[in-house]
Image (cartoon, rainbow, N blue to C red):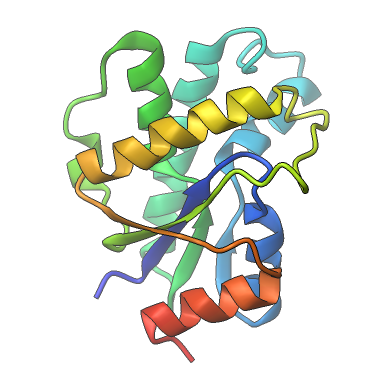
Amino acid sequence: MNKLNLISGCSGGGKSTLLKVLKARGHHVVEEPGRRVVEAEEAHGGDALPWLDMEAFLQRTLSLAIEDFEAARALPGPGFFDRGIIDALSGLQHLTGQVPDGVARRYRYADVVFLTPPWPEIYETDAARRHGLDDAVAEYDRLNAAFPEFGYKTQILPKTSPDERADLILSTLQIP
């Protein structure tokens, strides 16, 4: 059984909050690569930001997601990713029409990917999330289509509390 579990979906759909709950319960969590890229680029005045150079941003995000994946292979138990390789590949495919050859096959998460749906009532922009809800929903629609294309099953998480979402994920994966 693959112990590397991906949580993806709509920006502002509650992924990061859900991951905080899983971490508080003692599970390994990998923070969103895109947010870390934005933080690093802003810290040193770089251009690989989604509002300046989307392709460079996605390439950096993909590289970081691959590093995260490689590091997580050594985890003693299950790990949970806040977005990952497929998110970056989907973005590159949408932007350029191409996907780096073989990446999706070499780096496989667990077969079921958990998706947070659009949730307008909790959606907020911030310094790293400057796009509006319409763009977030369009991204979600692309991801919802992309995961099956890359050979994953998706499970859409209900709009419930982070604790209830965590319970559902752990129950589905049969993790105590």
